[in-house]
Image (cartoon, rainbow, N blue to C red; front, side):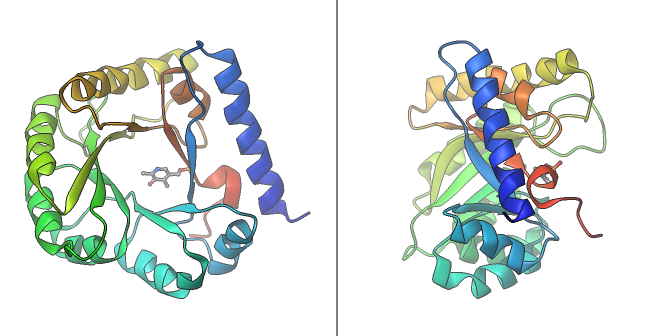
Length: 228
Ligand SMILES: *Cc1c(COP(=O)(O)O)cnc(C)c1O
């Protein structure tokens, strides 16, 4: 069997094991395959095996892949930092965006998403931990953005994404993910349609699942080390 399919099955198994270990109310999260910097043939291998959701971090690279994979009817998620001059491209091509971290971007996505398309699914990126280098909004900023997304007809407010500081310590990983879970519960209390908490990557997906992640984003452990 192809190595990518073997890796994929192993990641699926890790998710299932983590769900089984966790509290009863934890449900199996969706798996987003993060294909940034990986070649088209790897995406196609997974797509032909029935996988639909793929994540990209660079707008132009993502758009090129989306155009070349149109015949596969995949669901594309933008998960990288958003430069405001790329908001138009993202709004035109992607189905989801996970990394909305400031009001300027909300406004641009709102404006550039065509009313002919399904509303763009929006996750607001919460800053967790206090590393200055990590992007994301405070809870206050996040609630302001949520109100703006909620009233935008071309956008659909779906939840929260976070990228905590990387740690090898399970307790520390959970400490960060619990902050996102708490913010998620606050948001969900205000907006009943909220259903997505995007957190957990190759290195920390078990901790994220235990803290209630509904979508894990896995690159390396499916596709291998990124080529550059
Ligand atoms: C690259 C990336 C991932 C995947 O990380 P891996 O460690 O390769 O699993 C997940 N989320 C975001 C936002 C990323 O940029």
